Length: 119
Image 1 (cartoon, rainbow, N blue to C red):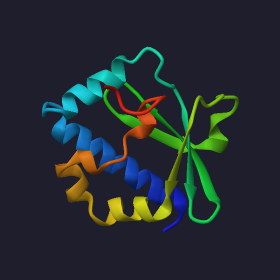
Image 2 (cartoon, rainbow, N blue to C red):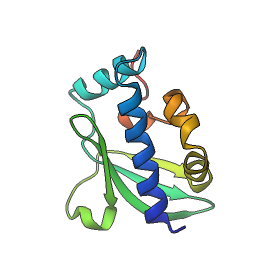
Image 3 (cartoon, rainbow, N blue to C red):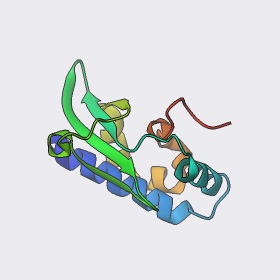
Image 4 (cartoon, rainbow, N blue to C red):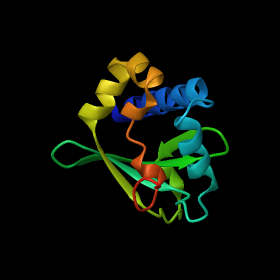
C-alpha cells in the first residue's frame, strides 16, 4: 500500500472513532477542547517516517472531522507544527481499525495540541 492510501485510511479510521465516540467521556471533552482551543494549529505537517521521512501530508481539524491531503497540495500553507508518525503505527491502525474505533484513546491525538495534551 502506498503512503497516500495508508494516510487516507488512517484518517477514515480516526473520523470513525470520532463519530462513534463523540458523546462518550472523556472523548467528547477532548474533542471539544481541541475544537475550542484558540491557539490550535490550523495545519499540521505529517511526516510518515521509518528511518527517514518517506512522505509529507497536512492534517487539520475541521468542525467535526479530520481532513488530510498531500503537503505538496498545500501551496503556501505555512504549517504551524509537525507530527512525525511511523509507517508501522499507521499500518497497525489500518490492520486493527475496530480496536482504535472502539477505544480512541489508542489513537495518537498529540497533533491536535500545540504543546501536548490539555490539562
